[in-house]
Length: 238
Image (cartoon, rainbow, N blue to C red; front, side, top):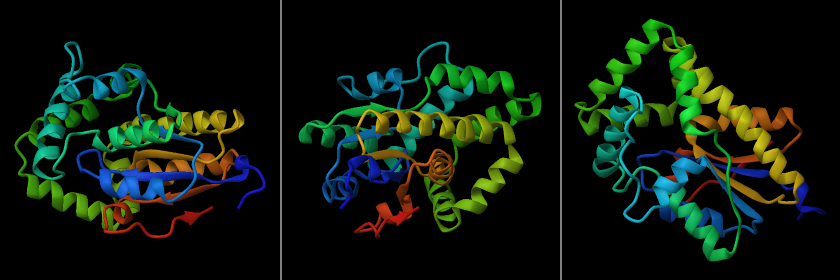
């Protein structure tokens, strides 16, 4: 045990946004005392996700590739994960409410992120992103599932491929957000919430752990490959 809760490591749980991980997630969260739960959402996405009837479709005015991606996520969620996109965030928030724990939204506002992304991207990357989002609408679910397995087997190599193919996407959607989420988690700890679990996309785990380490915050990680198994493995500390 820790002399103070602020000495406890932050528990980072890696999720895939189109795979239903509600049951294993609840097992992991229920296995330890917690002061609060953080989720990779901003206020706008949280409002949409938790609204009656579930998440709404992409709103008018969103970039075209975002609307394509929203449709793709809903389709893959039904065909691969057996649930809706964001189900893991809903499960974490529901668990927190049941235990009387605060829920912290630690991600950047989605609209600010998307505007920054589009403005930062060279024309070539914009075209590639739009084309890939459109093509994704017609890719069979088994192909996407195969790619997910390839990511699970070698997440570092997969991330390296992304950085090579689209360095702007990697910087804006991963690196910048990791730094901002680490700042928010540090702020939460300074408020006295030491034993916090943070549910984030699996691709954020390595970068977020590094960002926390630079801020002097210890962390543990349960990656997606362990979470989706029958039982999660022992978290890795740092």
